[in-house]
Each structure stands twice: as structure tokens, then as C-alpha cells.
Length: 213
Image (tube, rainbow, N blue to C red; front, side):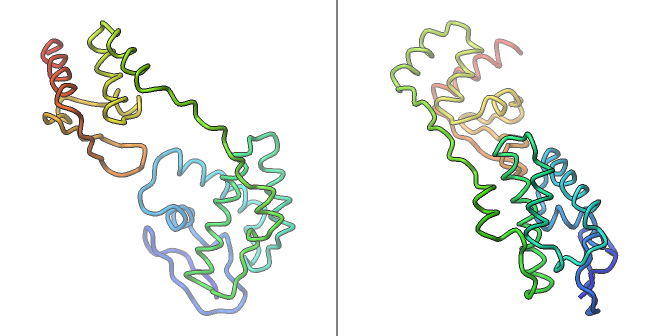
């Protein structure tokens, strides 16, 4: 089967012709969208564009089914030289996910060259060290001793609402409705998320907003 030129954004035509799926005939937007889903963040697109551009430069004229695990290993080794293990794992996962997409949606007979024991072992994500756990009493003490209202509210939103610091800093008055906070552009990639906070924290947040106008 041959994948033809795309006729529209996010659209791929499949023509039953011999010669295999050609990597370069798959549009960049389709590669990224099919691998990651429809909700894309800028850094995600940037990372996928990098690896797909590098891969196309080396294998663009090849049939996808002719690429071997040995070639994948050589390519990823050169591409990730000097990188952390997490980056190596991400590059590997990007290619593996796309080959799975081709197999699941275009040609079920194509073998994924990334899916071999040696590649899985080399690009395995190392188990991160456990996060240090701070006792609740210590957190409470830090919050209670924080005199600055702004800083205290920020700490409470993180400790009581489970919010990231980046999410706290993006909050606007329009996002706050009593105990409910709508997070714009959350890290999950969704359009928005809801956070519910204790009434005392909501009251302090309202006090801070009133004080700052």
C-alpha cells in the first residue's frame, strides 16, 4: 500500500499500490497528529517535528517495511548521543508510536522495527528516585508562618488545591468562582480543568483580589 499526498488537514488517502508505505509521503501534521492525538502543545509539536525531520532525512525514500531494528538502533544512538536517558526514551517512544499507528491503521502486516527486546532494554526509562515527602505538619507550619498574603494564598492553592506553581501564576479573576477555579491551558493539554479549594482558602483569595483591585 502507498500513502498518497494528504488532501486536507489531518487527512490521509490510502491507495492499494505495491511498493510499501513511503515515509516521506506521510505529511508532517499527520505524523504528529496520529501519534499524539488532536490536542497538541507547542513543545510536543516541536519535539515530534525534530525527530520526524531527522528520520525523513535518513529514511525518506525508503519503504517503511524495509527499515530494520539495526538501522533504528544506529539512528537513535546518533540522534540521542549525550542526551539524558529520559530524552532517549522519548525519542524512541515517538518512533515506536508512529510505526504502531501505521500497523494499526494502514498495513497490519508491517512489523514495528522499534519493538525488539534489545531496543526496549536500551531505551528503557530509568526508575526515578522517590520524591521526598514533607509531613503535613511541616507544610501547615510553613503556611501559618507566611505573613505575606499573596505568598500564603499561593502556598495554600498548591497544598490544599493540588495545583502546580505554573497553574497558580496563570489564575485570573475571571477564572475564580467562589471555591471553584478554572485552570486555563493546564499541563495535561486539555482546554481547561477545574479545581475545588477549601472555603477558607477561597475567602483568603477573595480578600487578596479585593485588596489588589
